[in-house]
Image (cartoon, rainbow, N blue to C red; front, side, top):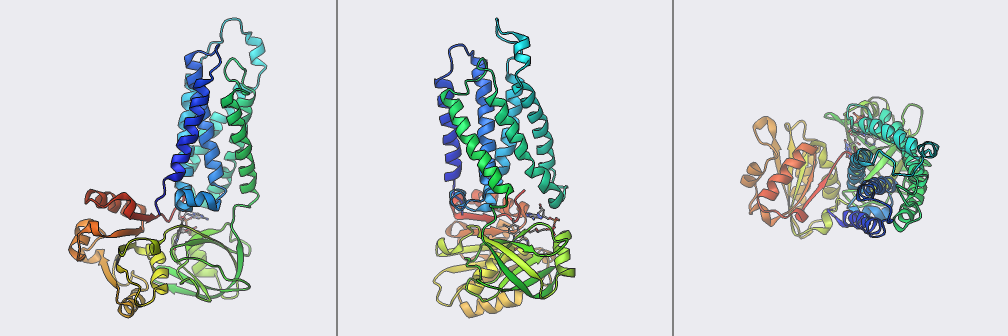
Length: 419
Ligand SMILES: Cc1cc2nc3c(=O)[nH]c(=O)nc-3n(C[C@H](O)[C@H](O)[C@H](O)COP(=O)(O)OP(=O)(O)OC[C@H]3O[C@@H](n4cnc5c(N)ncnc54)[C@H](O)[C@@H]3O)c2cc1C
């Protein structure tokens, strides 16, 4: 669910820093020095926010409206910090103030530390933003970005007072955030950011059209989740590498946990081809706030392909007499690609309040606002929207719905990617 409180908090942090930094600027500092160190400070605070967000703390999830959104903010903070660091570097006065010894300054490691941090940051950001790098290769260099952070801490702690007053009010704020940032980094690399791991055994692996359903039997406690939430699935055994996020497609309260995985890359192919009943799996979670239960009475659930999974869980959970009017728009290439179509049809007939609207692109029906208009009984702005599917589809729909007068707070989206 959209929640901007986290963003407002970040803006407030930057504003407090700016107030302290400009308001208490030392007398000897000229305007250029104050402004460039302000940019450096902003960059450092945004890096700290990015690191804190990677702890996946539940409280932060509430402030940002879900873990997927936290990771988006994490990414934007990193990118904006990179740009600010560049501006900081370009803006810092290159000539020393009169009376300051060049030799003395050359012995202070702050500038070289800053330079190394800048180079590493630019390389790390280029790697991070390169979507062609597979996730398992991308993860380690990405985690190593914490070392850049430590260099930046060294850079400002050792900065000569002619450039930055580390024990001035804004310096103390940076030192406090540095402590939080370093603790958060250690917390994440120690793997503490993974929520409760429960053990399961694979009961069955079911091949579907270009997707696989895995059914998990709990060894001990079963995960307590709400429909729309997701979890990280970590197969135990050699060669399975890191945990992968998937929406839980079973209904809350079922005695088995089910995930439906589109075959997309190495890991999901391995699930389909090599995972066997009896294998052990750890499930970390639940995460996410794609909460259909807390919205208005009239809702459109729009699923693009595998984006069906949160709605599948919700439809499986729903009881007759639910009171809501739901139109489940299911966009797929054709009826073969639309997995679970028969089950959805059956559930819609049992429930009475769910209308299934299949849109098959092979028949010229796309998940577009103009096509949806012709399929829905009421004006578009009378519904709450839940969109889950490929990012270009979700972004285009969101833009067009807003153009049709649907308020942003009534459009809820789930991104199936963190990067
Ligand atoms: C919140 C969320 C819910 C999701 N729910 C579903 C679902 O219900 N069904 C489904 O089929 N897919 C879902 N996905 C997508 C699923 O996680 C990826 O398709 C899967 O991890 C791909 O792995 P791969 O190695 O086979 O493919 P790759 O080709 O390596 O990766 C494809 C995409 O998945 C991302 N990815 C790969 N590995 C990871 C990882 N360990 N952690 C995070 N991202 C990774 C990559 O960055 C890339 O964008 C969800 C993703 C998120 C973030």
